[in-house]
Length: 76
Length: 235
Image 1 (cartoon, rainbow over the protein chains, first blue to last red):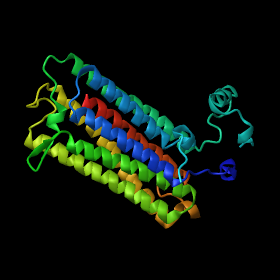
Image 2: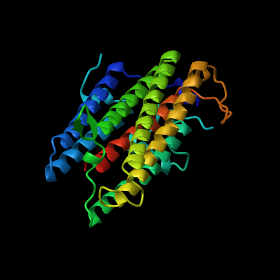
Image 3: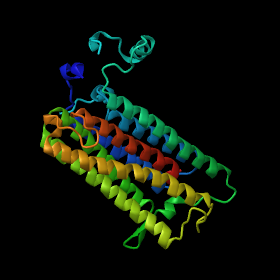
Image 4: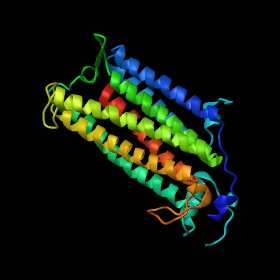
């Protein structure tokens, strides 16, 4: 406990969360479009899995200390 | 407790092996609550993996056609059928509440107590909206369409079983999260994490790391929804 109190707690700028949120929104929209545009077969399954894994990665990024480096953005 | 300088210990996977190999406690410098939350989430991952793997097995092996989720969960807006509309809105609400949760964690660590608490309330309201829409979806399927765990009018009977099991289990997670979000919002408003007031159940002092641990759970619930959305609703 003592060690934790001495540690500097690093917080992100609020913009990084808006970046992640925005990207999640965009990829969710892409996922929805897969169904809306009625893609079928291998194309459908590939796109579903690709967007799913991208969104899963973005969800994990919410917990990352290096989110801005990993995303390659410099939020305000 | 033995004294150690956390910054001098090996980091990353090497540090993990070092901890285990040192015949002492592991996850040095990690609050016990956070380590336990990760272990819980790992076990939860196994449960949801079992559900989704068996779902895909059932879909691949049934001889009766699988119901078209796009139509089953479609809504008619002003006479125009829109596929998966409710599910799309639910997804939007959940990813938004994940964003407000991350911001609450940030404000917590910056000791901006009231902002942190308000963002926790916003997150809880998002979760509540999600569960509300799920309740609507369930009642529509049960009372309007007559879907049961053992039969349904759309196709393969396993559809109903998996629908209630998978979305029910996820919805339970969201509901429990909402309860804890409201409890933690109250604790934050009261200043428990600044004054070190002891918790009602744990009789222990806590700090803003508790918000981050709650955040781990909430982001996990969002993560699981991504997989359910892909395999149950879209596939």
